[in-house]
Length: 191
Image 1 (cartoon, one colour):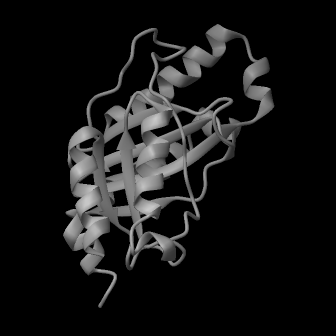
Image 2 (cartoon, rainbow, N blue to C red; image 1 turned 180 degrees about the horizontal axis):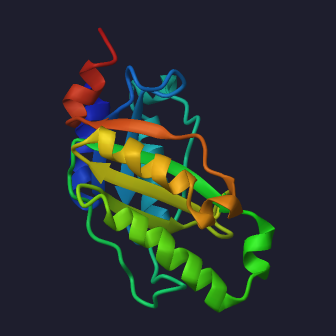
C-alpha cells in the first residue's frame, strides 16, 4: 500500500487532487479521487500508475465521471470556483430530459435563473457544475462542497419542487464523500 500512497502524494502535487473516504456512506465504493487537470492524458497516466501499484491490482473503478468546466450556456461566464477543501463533497451525474432542449433558449435561461436562486439560499455550499456532453454517459457532473451536510439535504429537498426538476431525467447515483488525507483514506479501509 505504501507505493499507492506515495503515488497519490507525488501525483497530487502535479494534479489538483482531492481524496475522500466513502467508508460508511456507500456500499459499492470505498474512496473517491477528485482529479482536476486540463489533460486527458494526465488522467490516464495517473490512473495507470495507481493500477500498477501493489494495491492497484486489487482495485476496481465502479464509477468514473469525466467532465470539463466551461462557461455557463445561460449566463455566459464561468461560475466555477476552485475546490474549497470543505469536509464533505456530494457528487452526482445529471442528465436532462429531451424536452428541456426543445424549450426556447430564453425560457430555459429563466428556469435556470430560478434554479440558481435556490442554490443562493445556501451560502455554506459551493457548487461546481462540469459538462460531460459527448465525454461520458451523462450531460453534467455536479459537485457540492460544504461543512454542513444538512444544508445539502435541505438544498436538494427544495430543488425537488423547482420548475427545473421536472426536466431532470437522471440524477443518481449520489456520492456522500468525507474529506480525508490519502493516508487516512487508506487507513479507513482496515488492515
